[in-house]
Image 1 (cartoon, rainbow, N blue to C red):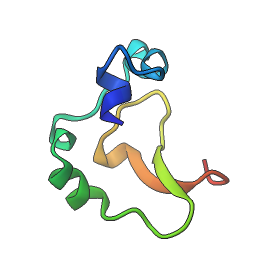
Image 2 (image 1 turned 60 degrees about the vertical axis):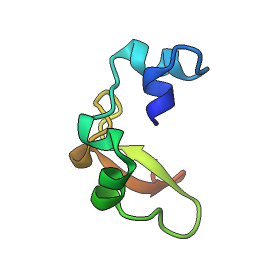
Image 3 (image 1 turned 90 degrees about the horizontal axis):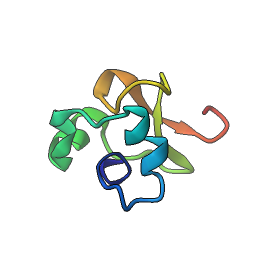
Amino acid sequence: MIARCTQPSNPAFKHYRKRGIKVCERWRSFENFLLDMGERPAGNYTLDRKNNASNYEPENCRWATKQEQ
């Protein structure tokens, strides 16, 4: 999440940061991310942005399966 939004050398950078997608300041600390999102659920869950055009932040993210996404 952080790499694809901050590192131009990351292959996904053009799909995230170049589109204006950012990671909220609070989530620059893994401890804060873990407090807000909790551990990833067992199974095939990934971090999903509810609004695909908005940032990675607590109110816009959830754990979701590929099917839910």
